[in-house]
Length: 446
Image 1: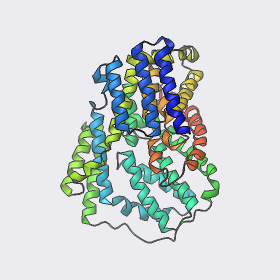
Image 2: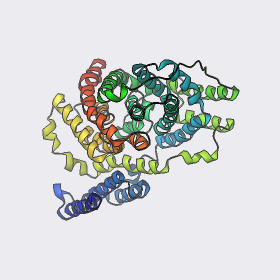
Image 3: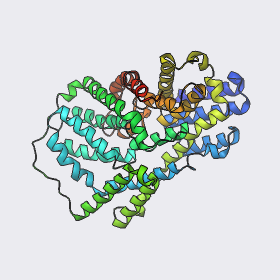
Image 4: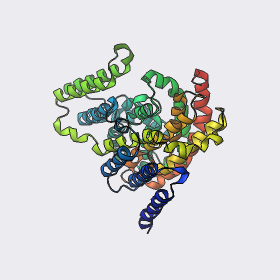
């Protein structure tokens, strides 16, 4: 019944917008807004597939959006597009090498002797893998395989296993804050949307310290939310298994370490991350770790979705729709950048996140809007990071984060996500006002 009501409700909203053109919209603006609503609903319900929905939105934007096609198609014309494509293939090479299981299983088995140690070792493995696999979806799939193998080896009870598998996904989301390469799509995306240039070191300067404080708080809240299930955790018998790498493994590991070093020293040699990633992919191909068949690891549907999602902010701004919809916020925001102003930005971003679902879609709407409204009061970087920290770690259901959607059903349930999702409201608000803002003031960001 609910599935039948949703299309009817969407149709009524579209007819209302086209017929009455609220907020003094012209016909083109009404058509663009209607197309956006239809597409976002399509993305949320998963029908039709994202390619069809995204192409529809892009066509409507180009025809009616009063925005140059180069601005609508900004994402596929950017270096980030190539970076993301090769990140899929390079990440598949890491998976093919089987190095993660060989390196991490002995480490987990040796040091995860109680639940606190286990959560810490999980956090460490996630951070290590951020510097190894640039594509977040490939990274979480690989880590899921490693941890599932570990849980099966210690015969962990299902309710505890499901909660801990969810914690792997939740920690990945939080760690994405630390590093620019934490989520190569989202983190580079917010820079593109805000039209800001920032190195890895500058990103870490702004976010690493408060991000670590947020991680500690997140871990405490996670233990509070699932205290019953976590009490059942028991480590397996201590194994004396050592890391055993053959000659091929050592060569493959050397290639990966070299890529990591080149990423870390970008400011010295000035080689772009894209060139480094392409070189690493070629090296993997020469080694036989990947082949042409691994090109199928590139998520074409995601690329179409990102192209459409990243175009929303440009079209909303240049077509004048953003001013008409969010212009009324000017009075609420006020003329001074203070805590009330910040709270409005944070809560508005969180509310948008609930309804739009996707982080990319939310930031594509919120960042340009609030940068425009705050012009002259504060630097764009501040608005960018405020929206970013408001939406990244806040979620209620799996569709609010694509990583959570990967694991839902296979590793954990909606109910587990929602239980911790309620705590993410507190996690987000406390982190922003107690960790991030004081830190940004200390380093002179604003």
